[in-house]
Image (cartoon, rainbow, N blue to C red; front, side, top):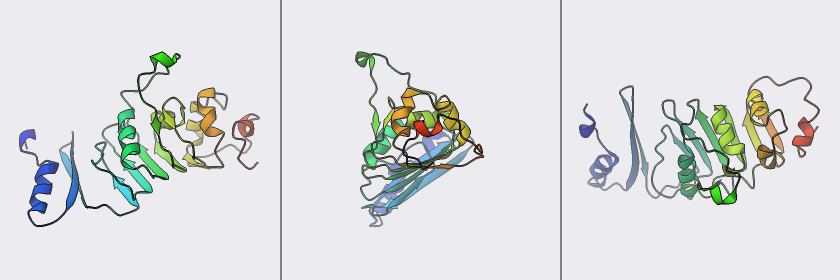
Length: 207
């Protein structure tokens, strides 16, 4: 179909509202001729929300504690996670599934005056699952100039990606978040013996 004829969220909601349903929705169309629509009742009261697009639904999801975001054809950029943090302010578990690299990666600004992009803050996030996410999303969450995670204590991740992003457990940019971790669950093979600087980098892990 020509893009101008594709149903929008407004089209979907209008048809349901006319039938006395109170709903919200989010539509998206991928480059390989596939469309999807997420329809949900309002007010939204479920504790888990799952979305399969990088177009996050509009609105406030106060009840959501566990969010799963996945997309196989577009990246999640920094502003996507800004919207997520604002829409789900009480989120305590986040699962990210995306192998598509970010196109708008943030560069570290040395000077405070050069800092032009807001840091994403997940004030209540305790569990972060990046097992099926590419390196860009590990950097997105563990680089302290990208994301603030004051309550993070559990990380699901691939060991090889953790090595890379922490520069073999020496990188100061990731040290603040890593020093809070009490549990790390590795998705891939881990070494039988950790490097000497592994446990000093994660001081709250049990040896």
